[in-house]
Every structure is written in structure tokens, then in C-alpha cells.
Length: 368
Image (tube, rainbow, N blue to C red; front, side, top):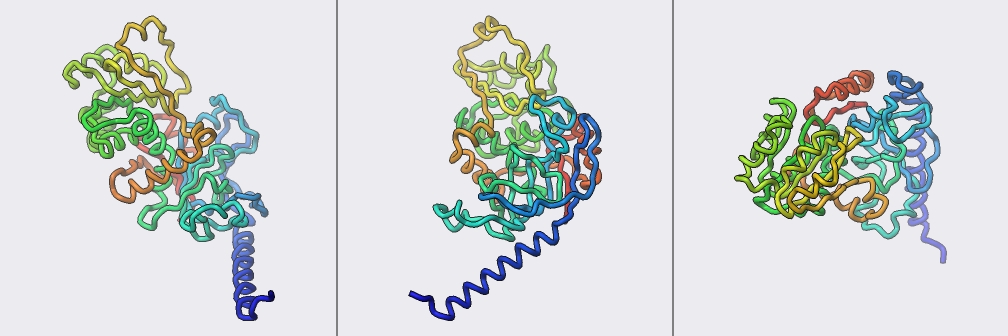
């Protein structure tokens, strides 16, 4: 049966509007700025590149307003990561911005209307497979994109998704923190440790003991709600934790640093406690003899990876990022931003991260 003329006219106008919007995006971003690694271990170069014209099924084009600078970005650009990249390479996997264009809706047919992404939506995205966030435009699978409320700034959104979702899975799902639990967190320089302190103290009401490098870090974690902030000293760490926990030890130990600190932190676990490993910016675990672990009170050892949940527990991955967005909107958690750089200052931002001067997340402001 033929559609009424008024309906046909309406649908035709809508199609023209969407087509015009798509063309406008393509014209606007035919040329865009990006920070590119051209040669291994060299500084990034900010230059004009051509925008990819066509999206693949299930992809969205995001106009990037802010991108977080994370440890994997630094490791990849310095050639220190176990993962290798094909040059030229644009770092940045944690972005916030606005959807400029999307493919057809076929991938969203089974989703609720609230989950359907549209041009103009404010979003955060995680692009750990392809990166590309240090650019005015980033193309991402819609599986890795979440809408954000208008109250959430792009700077906050870019600092939120990866660290807080990892912390929430570790503490809420795997450790099952309860109010009053003693939670020891290696909250040294970087976003994950501070996110874990925030989640443990303010969402689950745990008694958080943080291990920090400097007094500035200790002050920040206290402001986040830590019950106690200890400056790291391998010779006195166990004694300090025992004093604070009334000789019970930590019900939960979350190590986000790796390296030698793990060997000292694990000694602080209480009987039948849980030790979690996540993040590991150092990319290595200190050699700990099995015999020394068996001398400790019986405990569980748990590894946590947000990327692994994306591959093997996709619904959990989607849910946990949405949960941290909701928690931030409700004021339960607040990401800490150490410093904001412009795109042209990308090498200074990476150096700032490398020098371990940051207390919290480092953000690149790509555009207003």
C-alpha cells in the first residue's frame, strides 16, 4: 500500500536533513589536526591529516573535545609497550566529545531508544583497539561509546571511563567491598589509584589506607576520603598498616602500580583477604617467590582488566562504565585532574606524565 503523500514528504525531508548533516561533517573535517608518532621513540608531531570519509558498519565519528593522556600512550610512543603499533600512529584511547556522524541504525535495532546514539550526542568513548584520540576527530565502534549528561564537562568525562570502571569492577564486583572493610590501595601517581580510593571510600564506605610517593599525593587521597595516607617506605610499610588496622591487616589490597611495591603491599593482607592487581603502569610484577606467598595468611589473588571484560564479559563492561557515569552525575565520585594541556602541548603532557609529576589525570584539550 502506498504511503500517504504527507508521510512520504516528511520522510523525504528527514532523509535530506540527515544527508546534509553527514555532508556537513565530512566537509568540516575533511582536514583536521592530530598529534602523530611518525618515527619510533620520537616526539609527536601535530599536523593536518585527511579525515576518513566513510564509516564502517557500527562505527561513529566523534568530534573530540578532550582526550586523557594515559600510561599506555606514553609506553607506546616510547616503544616500551609489549604491544606494537603501525606507524604513523595517533595515541589516545579515552576521549570525550560530540557525535558528528554515525553509520545506519541496524546495529541498534534491539536496543532501547535511550541507548541509540545520534548525531549531536555528547559522549565518552574508549578506543583501546585503534587509539586515535589525540585528534580533532576519532572514529570508534559504537560498542565503546556512552552518552554523557549535559552536567558533565568534557574534561571530567575524559578522566572518568577507564580508571573508574576498572576500579569499580575490582572493588565492587571482584572484591565485594563492604562498609568498614580495611582497603589498602597503592595510589601512587596516576588516575587508577585515585579512582580506587574514591570508589572504595565514597561508594562502598571502606576504611581506605593509601600508599603514596609524596605528601602532595597523600593530601589528595585524604581529600578523596582515605582513612589514612602512608608515604611508601618498604622497611616500615607493614608496621604502618598493622598500626592503622589494629594488627588485623587489610581485608583487601589493590595494587595499581606493579613493580617492587607489590611485594611489600601483599604482605599487608589479612587472613582470607583479597589481593587485586589492575593497571600496572610499570608493566611488570616484582619477582615474589611462591614460598614467601605461602608463608602469608591464606588469601585470594585476583587480576582485573577492563579490556578483558570487553572481550569476554561485554554486558558487564557496558554496565560498569554506565554505572560510573551515573555515580559521577550523582556526585558520589569526582575524577581528579592534575593538569590540562592544549593539543599543541602534547609532548609536554607526555613528559609531565613520564616525570610522574601528575597527581590525577592529565587531559589534552583538543577543541572547545
